Length: 375
Image (cartoon, rainbow, N blue to C red; front, side, top):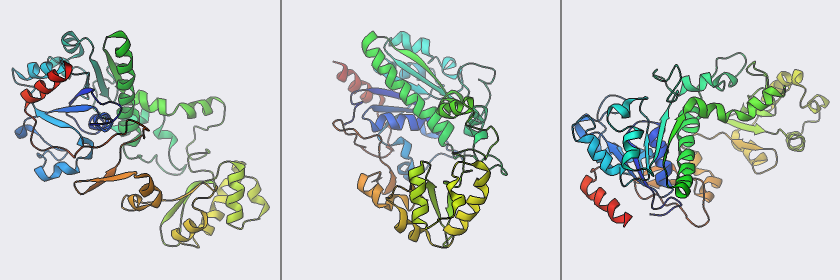
């Protein structure tokens, strides 16, 4: 094992999406993450069927973790988890509020067994509030934060931004940050605590800059009329002659000037960069310009310059880009190409150990290993 969290023991209560992603982040950083999974005959994927054995290597968010199978609804299941809790530094769970308590594994029970435990809870709506018990998904959580309504074109419905903003950014990454903070505090105080990570809260926090701009009068609530939402002609994506796309983000005047220079545009109307009434016409003119060449041709002309340019790559192309190759942004484990751990560290360099393991770890062996590490 390696990484800045080497020696930290984490229990991850099995789930989907943001919970496993948070656990992956901790495992990537060197933590010993044990997934508490259901017995084989009770597992099911998004399609309701048990995952095939060969499919485990495709479960990228399970990389670097070990797994124990515990029937939480059995008489002894809770006691088995509590035995692991006694030796753990962190527990993370993503059930609806009250589920862990009904299983006998709520914060009170766990902290009684291990007062130093960092107990991380992640939900969409949070542990409290009128929506706390409602079902939901990423698209719902980012809606009430104000962020989904800020995305997209004026004449179109807000586009779902995959589940990057709520589940992963506002949820998993916020919980991972909370865990790291609580571990530092526990080192000084000797006491654990409970983290309530709500995706609604986290997504709202991701929008801090935009709420500041709104208060200053620099951001309109009307979608598709702002600097960073694709309205500005100098900050958008454009189709090329081959049907592929490029992205331009020439916000600063000096970068905008270089964009115009490389495009050989001298029309005085383009000098009105920040006058919004000109944006629709200037965008149409840039679009007609970019569609005259292929993505590769524009890349050759502008990539690496101060134009703030990039080709829009798909997931097959991105791992082959020379910058990503140079930085080893992508790795391959068991034949599966996937993103490498991030961020980078100068001394405690993370090292992904393996893809998801098929055979469950023996619970007694895990406990013995963790108890031995405490001595």
